[in-house]
Amino acid sequence: MTDGLIGIIGGSGLYEMEGLESVEERRLETPFGPPSDAYITGTLEGRRVAFLPRHGRGHRLMPSELNFRANIFGFKLLGAEWVISAAAVGSMREDLPPRAIVIPDQFFDRTKGRISTFFGDGIVAHVSFADPTCPVLGKQLLAAGETVGARMHWGGTYLCMEGPQFSTRAESRIYRSWGVDVIGMTNLQEAKLCREAEICYATLAMVTDYDVWHDTEADVSVEAVVAVLKQNAETAKAIIKAAVSSFPARREGCHCPSALRDAIISAPSAIPPQVRERLRPIIGKYVP
Image 1: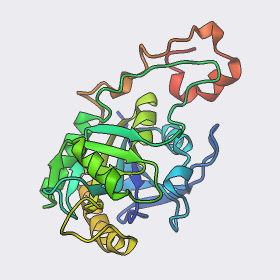
Image 2: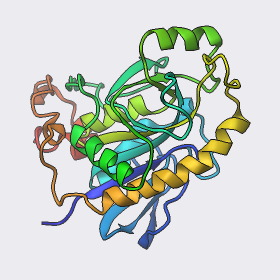
Image 3: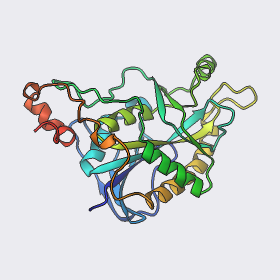
């Protein structure tokens, strides 16, 4: 059996992936517009991978400008079965200092009107999202992080805010009182779309700062974040490389590959032909 492709989304500070062999640049067109940049495909530790810089090379795109649907649809077109998403986050806990790596298993949405579904225009689907990340992939990243000596933390809630501004003190203190663990600006929509596309998804949430709730730490600033980003990026690369080297040939132990099986509510006869064709890579095995 051919090993499934592993997608890698590089967040702030992680714009390229060293060690790739047989490198090819793939620019894709999707029904939802262009992805953030070209996908860099190749092999890493003997496995087929595709790397996408989330904000584009040169960090050109704000969180609110990201075409999440195009990014994930592109991975689907390439045959990705897993997506590892690296992202910079702020910590809402004293025991999650800068340079800690969190594998969150929950999300809380504080974004404002971002499109986070492939469906609509004549087709309705409701996927289960109680557990928004793939536990099998998450545990694999956790084990890889421990192998390379990173400060790893399993589980927790990632609050996804709109940005691009950082939090006010009032917001930060309220979020902390809610019991969230980290705060970022990008990963919730990726998780929702990967679930609809039946792609296993997990986040490497790389802590850069304490947001602005901490009484003794300096307020979050771009300068402080960038200084930690570079260190975190190297750690993330090591974790991804270690994880990829031990990936199974096929997916087992999770429900991600069948997330759409009972989710499509619309009668096939009611789905407009153009919508059926547009979503064929996602719904094809359920809607002829």
